[in-house]
Image (cartoon, rainbow, N blue to C red; front, side):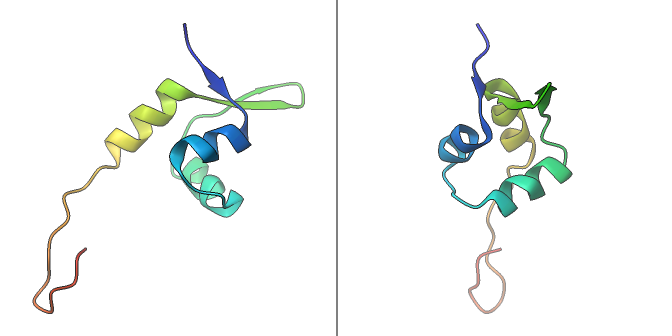
Length: 66
């Protein structure tokens, strides 16, 4: 069974509080569901989006992690 989150629940699941960050993720392709005035995000879509944007951290010459 697919679990659906409100925007607030989705932000909590992803570990941040900023609606600006959520809007950025949506602009970068995080799928949303809109039925009437209700907006939801599927847990499986969040997991897929995050997996697709995973990167391996590397250090530059100064020791900074990118």
